[in-house]
Length: 234
Image 1 (cartoon, rainbow, N blue to C red):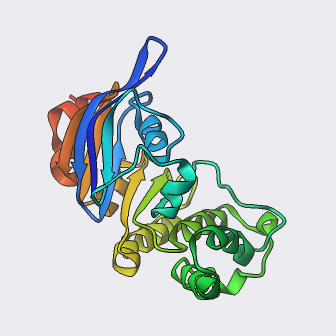
Image 2: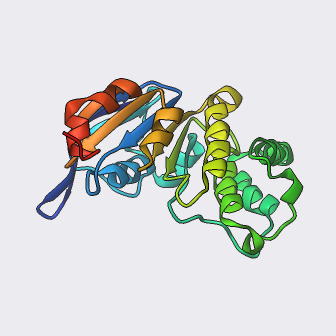
Image 3: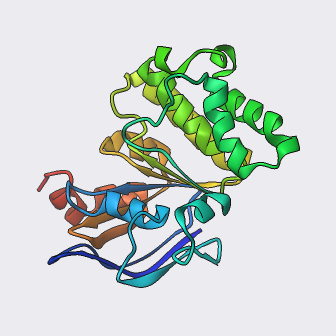
């Protein structure tokens, strides 16, 4: 569970996050909003790359804001990025092993990497260099890296961007299986409303850094204010 209380971020005279308070409890939750709504800023706050002026964040009851980005990873925070962070001259296996070196005890690393590879269906290409992967495989490597160790919160930033409908459906099913396999909560940012609808049982909508809506995804996407601000309807 993520508990966000009165978070404010200021960049000069701009507040990309403005007194945001929200609690996300769903195993797979969505985060949407128009461009400039503060979505990526919120992920950066959660990751430790941006320090808010005020407020607090609890992850499963543990305060996050006092922890460095590395300590947050050790505490179970994982994140993928819009541009895949795949090391080109390492194999798929070694890309995941590089994460395991930091978050898994030495005697358990091989098993942890194999489990992550299996979940994201990359076992058969584990020895392939990162530079030879296609876009879909690179996205799966990013997802696999998030599963290594004992994740508690996984932040996925537009994980399906550029994928075909078939690839997006596979990714969706893999993400939906994460809570049962690892116990981690997943927060997904994506502009694909139908993907959010299919993947997330709970969705939060930001608009100009403020909370516009939060609740069951179907209800949120039917909300008149959300349709007006984000979907361009009404």
